[in-house]
Amino acid sequence: ASVSIAVQKLTTLADSRCDFTLTVPDTVATVTVSAAGYATNRVALANNSQNEVQLMPAGALNEVVVTAAARPRSKKAPVTKVEEGQLEPEDGWNRYNDYLAEHLKRPEKVEQKPVSGEVTLAFDVNDSGEPVNITVVKSLCAACDEQAIELLRRGPKWKSTKGKKGTIVIKF
Image 1 (spheres, one colour):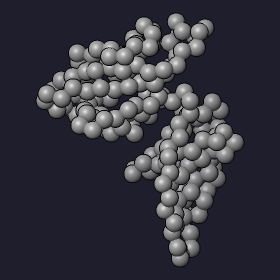
Image 2 (cartoon, one colour):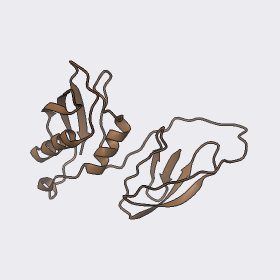
Image 3 (cartoon, helix red, strand yellow):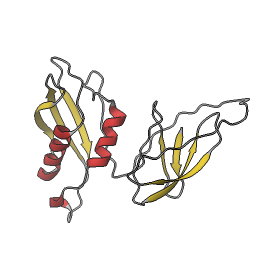
């Protein structure tokens, strides 16, 4: 399903479990939810809540056109870069990006002077799925580096694979 807020020009796609996340500053957002074979539904969703949206089946489909869709993110949403053969979060990259979007905050030390860019971290994963031996490969600023390390350390578990080193890029 496609979920969008026309006023703020935000759109996201629901994952295979029909879960989605939109980051908006309002306490209530009116979204439009649409999917092939279902009637479009416009509904108000409460911020920081578990909301449910139900779509009703539409009439019979005579034709379906499939197009590629990008998943836009707000400028403040973190982006992780994934390379082939890298370690993966246990719950997948979509859930990991949702975790970052929820927990990434501009460090207090840089509030007065805006900072944007990326922090690249390298790490190993222990048998419990926790990141260990974390090192900063590319620094943005000391406060951003510290926050990126804490996000990685406190975040979801990773799939443990012997001998593979993980790399993650967190965008501020």
